Structures are given as structure tokens and as C-alpha cells.
Amino acid sequence: MTQVSMTVNGKPVSADAEGRTLLVDFLRNQLRLTGTHVGCDTSQCGACVVHVNGQAVKACTMFAAEAEGAEVRTIEGMANDDGSLGVIQQAFQDHHGLQCGFCTPGMVMSAAALLRDNPKPSEAEIREYLEGNICRCTGYHNIIKSILAASGQEVAIAAE
Amino acid sequence: MYAFEIERPSSIADAVAALKSEEAQALGGGQTLIPALKQRLAMPEQLVSLAGIPEMRGVCKSDAGELCIGGATPHAVVAKEAMADFPALADMAGHIGDPAVRNRGTIGGSLANNDPSACYPCAALATGAAIITNAREIAADDYFQGMFSTALEEGEIITEVKLPIPEKANYQKFVQPASRFALVGVMVAKYADGVRVAVTGASENGVFRWSEAEAALSADFSASALDDIKTSADGMIGDLHGSPEYRAHLIGVLTKRAVTAAA
Image 1: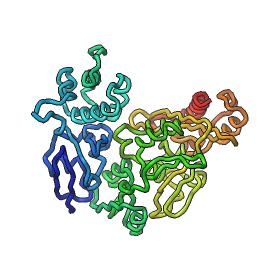
Image 2: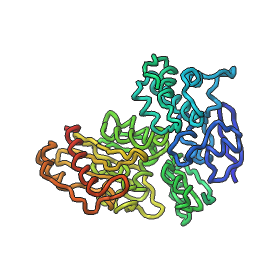
Image 3: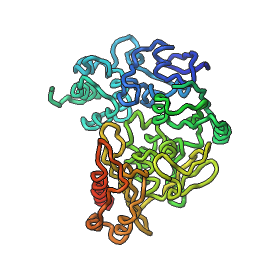
Image 4: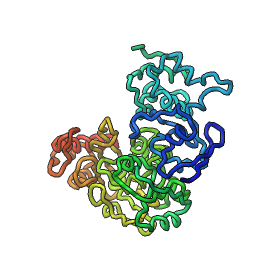
């Protein structure tokens, strides 16, 4: 066991972790930030996407010790300071971008990473960027609509 | 996963020293190694992370016309920073895995693993790259030694890769849609002294050069130059995604597409 320290959603945190402790397990079990989900645990599904030093990563495929000293942002850090939903979260609610909601934390974190690099993505660019995020309700159309809306663009694709 | 300790050295010298232990293993971006550890396919007592070594990160262009990429440079950085000097490589890097995987996975990790369906081995072989390690420089033609097998010695790490920038190049990947690895991938690179063609995903011996196509394209850099060259299914991978015959056929199709796109 070694002590791992990082900044999570702006707050300095520190807890014990084994070498083999995954970042996602550190967040969920040690810090009790259970918004980040473990779907497949094989880096396919993207439910565990968080930002480490501003980069979207799969928290199930990175060790907590590798995030020592890093700035980590999770779904719990996506709301506004007053607790109201952030722009992307609100767009997911408005456009029914979630069904069961299991994949949503990863979808929102991937969307945030995309919109930072590409503030007005096309529908095709959004679909390509979400290649590593799987929604097993298959609710992709509304997820795409939500992200288009969050980027301030007209939501033109047909509802399915 | 079995238990292990993680070391995070900040210099190549410290990493090499840590890897002297027989039970130690290098950890690049972990996008292949961590899933393998979860399946208990590896059981190191110590992982030596190469991610925090500044001298192993970054992309630059040498005076000799090579693109020099630090061994611990993630795919996403190559996709961005190689765009101006070597767009075919940037395009390849930008289509490995998915965006989150590209933020962690590294060129050194990919080359050290030498997965038979990985993209970077194809680029290294098609450009005749130099694989620079902590100990020596290895020519790509000598480096790849069959599926998951390379010239690297125990404890040797890839610190840099130098890829001669071609006049024209293109990479065509036929994506296996579940894994996003190449079912077959072909890179064609044209230099003043000839054309090199490397193929990944197809052979049971891993990445290889298609010498008949290289000769034909060196004489005439057009897709039609390949019309009479047949590929054999002997030694090609056959699995539920595609038969050896199918992969052999794809090699020809993708090479023609790459030549057309590059020309």
C-alpha cells in the first residue's frame, strides 16, 4: 500500500492504494465517487471515462498510482457551482440523451473532451469521437442530438 | 490482477536501472498490458511506468528529414503533431483504438508489443524507421521478428523512433469493427530511391514487407502496376473475422487504395 494523492474535481485528495488499484476503483471505492461506472472493465465501453490532466481516459485502464499528482475530473465535477446541471448534462436531459443512464457519465465526459477541442463538431465528428463509448440501450441518436445541442448547434437529425 | 508495485521513474537512466530486476516489466500507456494483467496473462512483481519521463515524449523533425517521436508519446499527440510533416502517419495515429485509448497508448508500447494487427509496426516497417533504445539503434527490417516478438532484449526500452519522411505515403486500414485493430492494414511509402510497402493484420508472422508490390510500384507508382500481382493465402491468419484467402485478397485491394490515395 502506498498513499496516492491527486486533485479530484478541484479538491486535493489522498488515500491508500495498492500498485494494482485501478483509477476507477480508487475513485469509486476509496473516494466514494460512484458516478464513474465500470461497464466492461476491458476498455471497450467507455462508461469509466474521466479526465486526467484534461485528457479523456478510460479509468479502468490506468492505475491510480499513475494519476499521482494529476488533476482528475469526474462526472461529479460537471455540474455548475450552484449544483444545477452543467450545459452538457442539461442537454442530455432536454434531448433524452439517456435511457438506463449507465453509459451516461462516460458519454458526458467524452462529450466534454470533444467540445473542448472542437466546439462545433459535425454529426459525423461526434459519432467518430464516441467510437469508444458504448450505449447498450442503443440510444445513440439522442446522445448525438444532446451533444449537438450542448455545442449550441441546431439539432437537425430526425428523432428515432 | 496479481499484486505488484509500481515505480514511476523520471529519467531513462532510472527506468533502465529499475528494469534490471528480473521480476520487473515496463509499463507504457497500459492499453494492452493492463487488460493482459487483468486476465492474469502476466505476473510481474514490479511495473516500471515510462509515462513520466519527459525525455521520452514529444515529436520533432530532424535535419535528416526524419520524424522523431519519443517512445512514450501517446497516439493523440502524434495525430496532432505529425500532421504538418507526415500526414499519413498522423492519420494512422488518429485512428488507433478510440480517443481515450489514444490519450494513453504510446508508440513505444505498440512497437514493443508487436501485436500482429497493430498499426504502428506497419508504419515503422514501411518507412524503414530506426528504433532507438536505451542501448542501441535497431533498423525496422531487423526489429520485427514475428508475432509479438521483437529484437528487444530483457529490460531494453524504446526511447525514440525515427521515421524517414516519405515523398508520398498512405495507410489503409480495414477495421475489425469490434476491436478497431486492423483486419488488414497496408502502408505504402514512396521515397526518391524506391517504394516500401508494409502489411499488418494479415500474416501469422506479424507485420511484413510485400516485396513484389514494392518492385512493381518502384517502377510505376500507380494502382494498375499491381494488377498482375497475386497474393498467396499461405501463412495468412484465418479466424472468425476472415479466412486466409480473404485477408490475402484484402492486401491487394488496400495496397491499390493506398497508392491511389497517395499518388
